[in-house]
Amino acid sequence: MLKIEELVHAYINSQCDFEKEIVLTNHFQADWEADILIINSEGFSHEIEIKLSKSDFKNDFKKSYVNSSTGEKFLKHDKICCGDYICNSFSFLLPMGMIEHSTIPEHCGIIEFYHNVDSWETEFYLIREPQKVHEDLYWSLTDKDTFIRKMALNLLYRKMEIKGKHEELIFKNPFEIRKPK
Image (cartoon, rainbow, N blue to C red):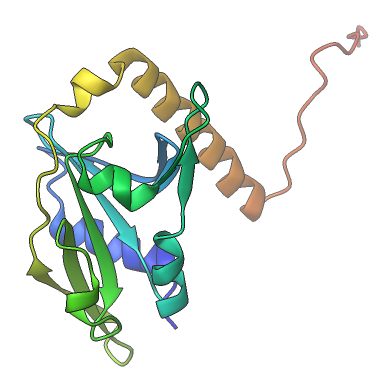
């Protein structure tokens, strides 16, 4: 069975241009986590949401947001399709044939994949381009300094998480009194 991390790795390494794009995985923005966030050199952003089951796909349309100042409740895809979302475009990355294309809202792009378990090759097919829901650049909606700090902190957390999985980490107490030898 293909793990989501393997799928993300296969997608970003075959479909993204790291010299021209900022590519982030599991990046929190607005009130949701983007499985893949791509910001191109012009500053336009594209969120790609990975769905591996029909139930997970259906649940994405139940995700909501409550405006802290007004108390109003909004559904995620209502915000996306009307352009009241930080990303310029939004796509679903799905296994081939899992969802009937006509059930996916028109504003959403559709990328399907086929994973060959024998060769461990994964192929991606762009079924439908996502609609650009607004023309605002990502950097006009996000503070770059905060964005960079957040990226650096996430990198540190992930490094420590990975190291912790491979070796026992023991941190010295910085308040410990040093005794001369």
